[in-house]
Length: 199
Length: 199
DNA sequence: GTCTATATTGAGATAGAC
DNA sequence: GTCTATCTCAATATAGAC
Image (cartoon, rainbow over all chains, first blue to last red; front, side, top):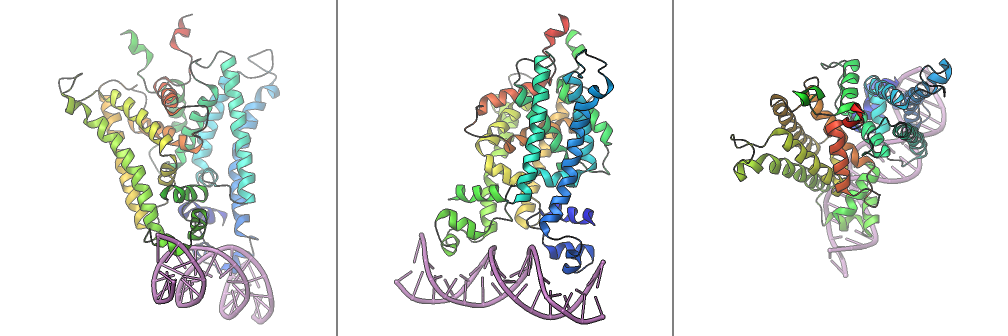
């Protein structure tokens, strides 16, 4: 049921989606729909929780991993930041593919209601966590020094988030292959493989 | 006047923007606004023309340059594809910064009206042009061979387009500096400068 | 060019029967 | 859980005076 609703939301945008459209698509009357959701805003809230919850879990797992495992790489007990970035980017690509409609909803919020403002606040918190990891990567010397870590974080997630605009589940790329391609691009860009430089 | 209207559109989304909001923000009555625009859709159409026109000029100039100048790099009279990509990316970053609200409008279209469908068609044409250039870059051996040119094109413009989501004209980065950073990222990604590999 | 007044449609939401 | 009927409000758009 939520799936159909979110499909309507992504097809027309949340604001332009009417309860009439939703109930039509569900084959129910408007008031029948109101038996399952208290309001249109509640539908949005539940849908956004899916997207935000998935993304927050991505960060929790990447950041928590090595403290849980005891720290295999560094005495400090923390994974190297670059490894975390790789893990987060891969997982975020999978979320973008698998939770596509929910993520579209999140990415297109305007912040004109309480529900939207709370969601945007949680989204900002995720951006801040990502930025912190990029800054750690920089201080570990694992990030090129001619690129601001804040910009690098924004570029990277701008790219990942843009996947939802064109990804199709029945398209030629599997989410895993897409994650590989994104990681390759993020790591070393467009230029020819470095081997070529020495031919 | 259009500037104020587009600001309302980007703040609330086109669909959620009412003529009441627009006329309030302009300090006019609704019918006074109707003296300048035939309909809400016409406002959108004019605003989208700005964004699409700017982007189409970017491509026209990059693709037309060397045939006009006689071809300085290659006997064929065409610029190398990588040079065109660089030029297009830089110009597109500037458009994203300078025409930000108009571009936001374009990027968030849903395609639920004739005006929107026509705009999306023009946008698709631009994507196709970009993809063709990336394919030429690949065939010239100037693009790494482990990355599909179509994906590379989408990633690159996903990144550039995502700038409109957070860029602020009064922020720390000038559009030019931002273009430099994007080009550096697109060219060689996050990894440390190659010199570091030989230390 | 701008106004007030209004026509008309559809929105989100509720009441109450079944 | 689903329905019909309805409330209230705001939407786009127009008419016609100034």
